Length: 219
Ligand SMILES: *Cc1c(COP(=O)(O)O)cnc(C)c1O
Image (cartoon, rainbow, N blue to C red):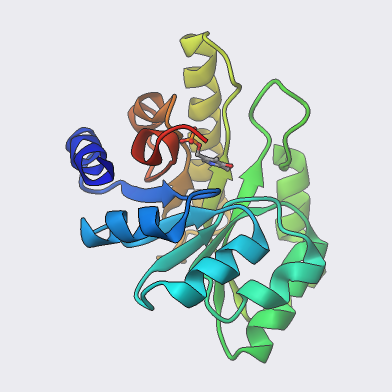
């Protein structure tokens, strides 16, 4: 079942777009089934759950933390996490940097933008982001690497609205790349698109989709 859904999904996703299988709340057996079908990128939004699963599953899995990360929990995922998607404050960047250094790692992060109409979601505005990138403090963070941006569109039937929001995020990504990261070959990730809207996200230039229920079933 899971492998069938994965195969079908991969046909719709271009080669250059990374598929992160969002496995939150799902048992390790389900992740193993996806793993056996060749899936290597998995996304989780709870620290404890991700740690538990990582200890039980093969070491070549790339773990993506896609939830809101509390500073006091960074230390638990720092040894093994592949990419932290939802970074939206200097305080969090500083703690990720500290824990990365302790683990002798460079940790990759994405800056989360607030693009949806709902005000319940986390994320930076354009102004907050440029202030963050121009701050003196950020220049001293040697153990983090900002690899791109992440965002979530409004949960709505209005597909034009969703397209507009994804287009906005892609525009932020392009502007950041040319203004602040033109020499950084690693600034390549525009993480947008979930089960309900990934085709619109890809149409607007997504390079990474985070898909849960279309692979593992509803939660
Ligand atoms: C749960 C979640 C997803 C996946 O959602 P689906 O609708 O199940 O595909 C993607 N991104 C984030 C940040 C999530 O929390």
